[in-house]
Image 1: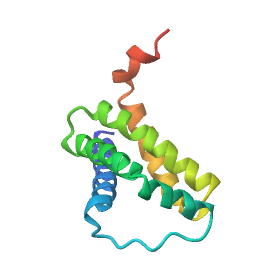
Image 2 (image 1 turned 90 degrees about the horizontal axis):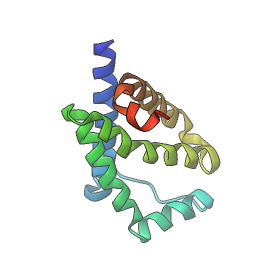
Image 3 (image 1 turned 45 degrees about the vertical axis):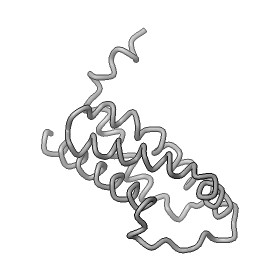
Image 4 (image 1 turned 30 degrees about the vertical axis):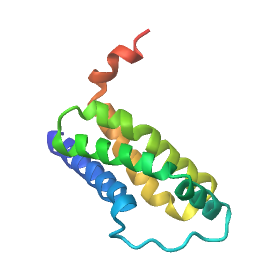
Length: 124
């Protein structure tokens, strides 16, 4: 189970470091937003620079997972980002749902593996 945890941690960390860094460095070309509600939402995130704040959380959370120190803190930083990714793909752009599901499964698995770190906030 240690190997599965390490693989999930590194995979999730890499995903968020790469795609978070892409917001600033533009090394993966992004197509123009489609003329749909999802496109309008994406444009609003870019034009307001809100996406830059989200990218910082993605990079920091992903780096914490990759380094292997403070993994619970990295999961806490990434969990709301992943919930938003899920909601966007559920409600606005279903084509990205398979990747969102994989990321969510990795998050839930890691939250379960590090559940002892969250006992303080989950106990009555």
